[in-house]
Image 1 (cartoon, one colour):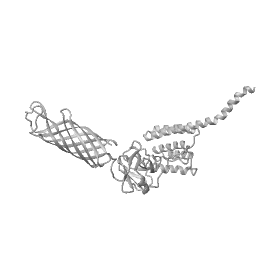
Image 2 (tube, helix red, strand yellow):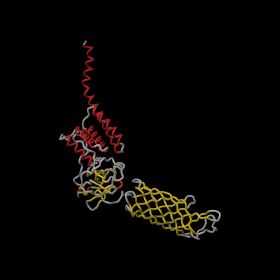
Image 3 (cartoon, rainbow, N blue to C red):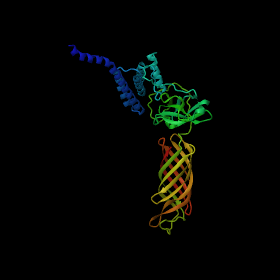
Image 4 (cartoon, one colour):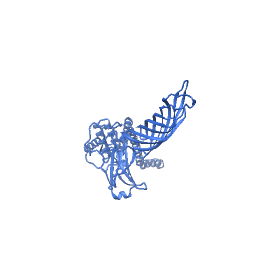
Length: 445
C-alpha cells in the first residue's frame, strides 16, 4: 500500500514546493507583457494614433488587474490612461486614472516629455485626493529615474517655462570657471512634436562663461517641447548636465502655432516665469548643393551670327533660350552669407557657362529665405533665332556677370524648394542682356 502511495506523495510534494516558483515566474512574465503594451501605447501616442494607444493601455490594465500586478509598471499604465483622458477633455476621468496610478505607486510621476501645466494641476489634484502615503512606491527592481533631478552645480541655468509659437527659442547657461577649463563642447538636446526624435544643437560661447543656443522657430510648435543640456570633455565623456532625457525641462508653447498637438487644454495654466525667447539664426547650415531646371531669353544684337548659316541676316531683338539645367555648390561662411560655384548647361543645343557667386540672405522667417545673388564667370548662352524659312541658334558671351534674387522654401531640415530669377550680362563678340528663371531643390548640411 505504501508503495502505491509513494508516487502520489512525491507528486504532491513537488507541486507544493514548485508552486510558488511557478507563480513568481508568471508574475514576472505578466509584468514584462504589461511593460511591452505600455511601450506600444507610448509609441502610438507619439504618432498621434490615439485609438491604438487606448487599446494597448486597456489590454495592459486588464492583464495587470487579472493577475494582481501592483507597483510602478501598472501605475505608469494608469498615468498614460489619464493623459489620454485629458487629451479627450475628460478631466474627471483623467483625475480618476491618476488616482489609480498613485494608489499603486505614490512615487509615480508624469512623463516630462508630455507633461503640461494643466496636466500637472490634474495630477496634483489626484495626489491630494489620494492623501498622504509612502512616496517610495513599489517601483521595479533597480528603480526608475523618470522624473529624477539631474542638475549640475557647476552650471547656472534658468529654465524656460513658456515660449511663443513660431519664434526662435533662446536657451542660455553659465558655467563655473572650473568647468570652463575642463569642458570641450556644450550641447542642447530638445524634443518637439515637429522634430524626428531628439535633436542636438551645439551651444555657442557668448563671452567667458555664457553659452547660448537657439531652437529654430519651425520646432516651436504644438503644445510644448522639452530640453536638457549636456557638457562633454575632449574625450567625449559627459562631465556636467542640466537635467536628463528622462527628466527634461518642459516648455509650454503659447498659441500652439501650426504644429500637431495632443493638447486637451482649454484654459491657461498658472503663470510661470517670463518667457525667454529671442529672434536668432535658424539652424546652421555649412554646405548646400542645388540642382534644377530653367528657361530664359535675351536680346541679341546685329553682331550675332547664326551657327548653321553664318551668312544669314539676323534681326536684332528678343530671342528665347528655352531649356537649361543648373547645378551649384555653396559654402556658408555665416548663416546669411555664402560663397559658391555654379554651372548652367543647355543640353538640346549644347552651350554652357560656369562661374562663382556670392549670396546674402536679407530676409527670412520661419520657413522662408530671400537672398541677393551676385556672380560672374565664363561661358556662352545659346539663343534660338528665326531666319526666313527656318530657325537657327546664336552663341552669346565668352564672359558674363550676373545679378539675381533667390527665394527658398524649407520643406524640412535638409531640403528646400528654390526659385531664382537672374539677370545675366553676356560680354564678348556677341553680347546680350539675358534673363533666366530657375526652379530647383537645395540640400543643406
